[in-house]
Length: 385
Ligand SMILES: Cc1cc2nc3c(=O)[nH]c(=O)nc-3n(C[C@H](O)[C@H](O)[C@H](O)COP(=O)(O)O)c2cc1C
Image (tube, rainbow, N blue to C red):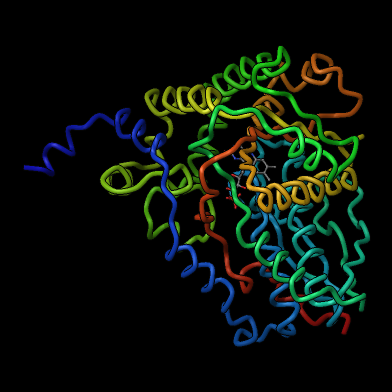
């Protein structure tokens, strides 16, 4: 009887409850993240030290668009690695120039840099890529540096482990001045804050809604999204990537329904597209405002820097208790991606748009990651030693 009732609930209603719930998980995250950690790279014949294993593990906790984790690692020697772009994981529809892919790789490198400090190492990064489509992006050489204190190391570990994308339960409350200056001060001159109730904030709200509508109407973008949505828990556990209902705050009966009845075809339905946009509208009602990050150009080194800056700011936001939700559609879609710079009187190119605000408690991360053994380019491992 109950099952019959559940089946009768329209998809749209399920989506509604899914996206409005505020769920904060604990143990399952720890469980799978620990599994990622104890991924037995060494058992698989991958020769890396425990320190490097931990450093790379923290790298994998970086954010990436669609949680596609478009990074690979090549071990060159015990103290040198290369970071590669995994071209099978780039998003040709929403990110045709690999702009977001390189920003994601930059965030991955920032995590590696910070995790290296925990081990008393300095990560020297040299850019290898000449275009956004090259495979070899940077080489990282680890050198002995001044040891940091145990407390500082623990704080870095905590920030790296707890940083995540928060999409629900934002309060409609202005960001306190000291938080604005603290966060913008992490990357001076490259981050700009627009309060929700400012005229620029209102322009951004309209633009984010319209660009989401535009993207939801693009079949190819929607198809690409469908390939990264993991409705079932088994699929998410198997792939260790993509966007799961938990990341949207879904639990209980809604979670069960979605995992049993939603498929990649659901994403193409009109009702799903409409729900996506109405969820965005709701999200925009509650937050403090937006932080926009800018970089001088779209070349690899500028985008990698921007990804590192994004992650530096995000890790500090985590430490401060400020929630971050990237909303990229305005920078991805025409005509907004063209007009944004001029409308906001920016001197450099807008690369990341972040909805920011306060929540009661920052939720535990629930997004999945692939194990290190899958991102280390085993074939080439050891070459050059
Ligand atoms: C370049 C970039 C663009 C992103 N754009 C969006 C976005 O438009 N909407 C969104 O909800 N999340 C966006 N995200 C957040 C990712 O979905 C998120 O980082 C990923 O799913 C992993 O989850 P986590 O950040 O909680 O670890 C973006 C992240 C990056 C790095």
